[in-house]
Image 1 (cartoon, rainbow, N blue to C red):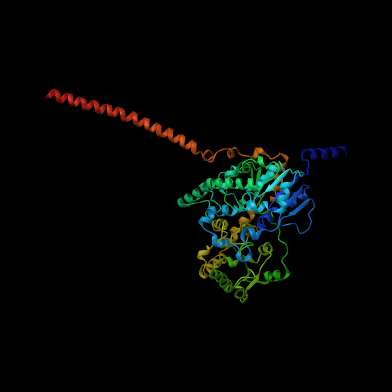
Image 2: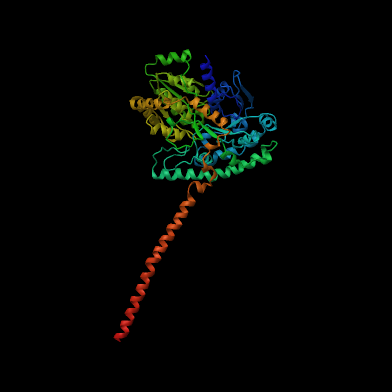
Length: 529
């Protein structure tokens, strides 16, 4: 018995449990982002940590050790009221890709600072936190200041794969020769012209992003006020000193990319065995001889965001198919009656997506190429047809095409013939199903669960008081130093100098010899005369 007690004591000494106070600040109404972070926060609470979450999305039922501080929904202030809301599909283009998000971010510091829960946090002089979790890659950079306020290490959570500015700030420089920027529809095998544009976008983001952060620094000092805020370090320095980034991506749905230890992927953390389908949908999926095709543009975009003629193309083509088509369509869509007139279409404003994709009779997933939808399609091994609309959807769609798990139709090329042909090819060619099954196996083949890995690294940062040893030294270098431009220029100058000296060594003797020969010729002529 004494031996057993001794073993228990030793095991607890080697792997001690601890309870930390963790503050998670996610005040913007970005449900597709926050909903993927919440499972991590709940798991931290389940493991005994005291977790405070500041967001517009409180838990439906109380979670032990988790405290919700509810922020009012500011969607209307961010993108306008429903009748005047920004249509990001119409805004999409080169200019928006290059600077649109930064322009969009210019109003968020003031908006965030006016929220009462944020004001209360700024006034709070009694709470102590061991860790602050914020989302700094998406228009909320100024929230990193709360790490300074509470004298706590900061972990960044990111809803997308790494971009060039984020890579620069974390010391994970992206080789432009084979790592495509997420805003571009390229694979890791690029042509010369694609590498030219990829390199431009990669290097554009760093100086322009630095200017953006300088303006955000000004806004941070203007709106984020608390006792001691007058001593705030530069914003860019605080971002560089972020202890860790948890990134919502997964190598199984991305190209190989070199990361340091300060980047941890957690994409697919919510994916698991799907719950049972509602009885009516279960019956349809079980009994459809030809199978079911599932269509959705995700939770943020609607079919009505695209051109009316393109909307009719979707409805008309789906209506011609032998398969049952589940079509997510908003109740305000002008072509709702047309869609309902098609007997093989089931129209709803919401579907239990994971459960539909998990059913063996789901033959095809037609998607806009959102990252989480692509992950779910791969996880459940369903071939995909992507119609990308904005942002990283084009990048994700290219991955679908490049990995052979589906096809892509660009919105400008969407017509009845193209859509019918693509659907027909995917359904009749078994290679799409075989490759997505292979990719699904890759997705699920991990040494430990995605959740356990994420929790381990969060607790690692707390245990090691910010884990500064994870921070690569490259973040202390200027951009031209990290890209070795100064070294390249130095060697170029040396090479030019050597070539110039060699030129002199060759030319001067040649000129001297030429001069001597000319002089000799002149002397000989004089003697003859």
